[in-house]
Image 1 (cartoon, rainbow, N blue to C red):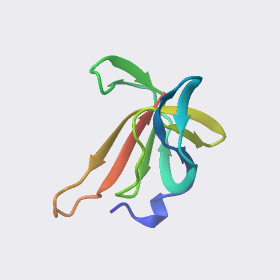
Image 2: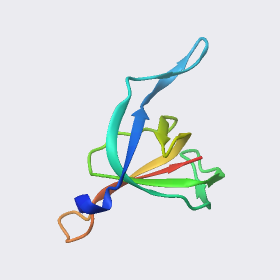
Image 3: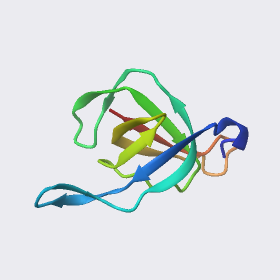
Length: 102
């Protein structure tokens, strides 16, 4: 797992539930400790389209942050492009959830 001393930020996650009659629907907000990396890079979304990510957020394993979720971190509201579970399968790696946001 990522060491606790690396998780210097807090993120408020509102999980995407689907689209309603008036736009996206979100679940109740959950606050999680995280590490934020503000770097612009080109990523692929779940449909394979290339898009630009401005922020990458690293969470402890098990944090749920589906595509389309709304995340507030460092005073900014962002939208999740993709979420990846990074699990070494028992190897001594820093297991974590990596979330790329617009």
